Image 1 (cartoon, rainbow, N blue to C red):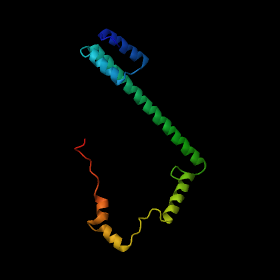
Image 2: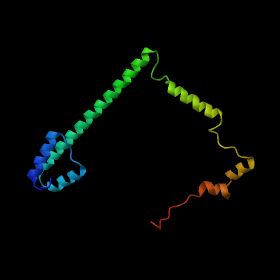
Image 3: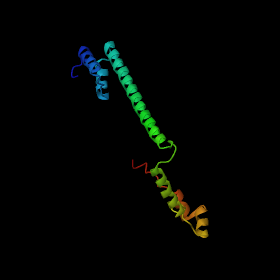
Image 4: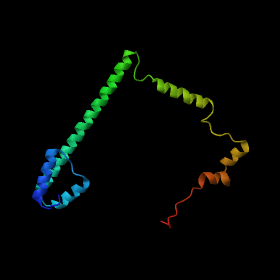
Length: 143
């Protein structure tokens, strides 16, 4: 691609089409500069784009089909033991029990304040209000 000739660019693009290789953004920029007035280059780039789009669509379809196959296989395995996909797994049950025990121990409760401190935290002004509302602002003059 050192050459800026349109014919050489067309040859390289046709090789790209045959090999199913797509240009990088930098190479696409150079191709656009080399052939901005050549219609043949525009047509070849359009064919590259449609080929890339078709490849991506087929790859996405294949991936979704594979995922669906895995899901169907899992549902068949669960049906063999008399469960559905909505039943929790042993890991999910253990996780639920763990967090329920943490909740019973009071780990998720808000910290308890004496009544005077609670009222002070709710009032406007003072240290607790400043701690909640005063946020450091970026120094725009330094930037």
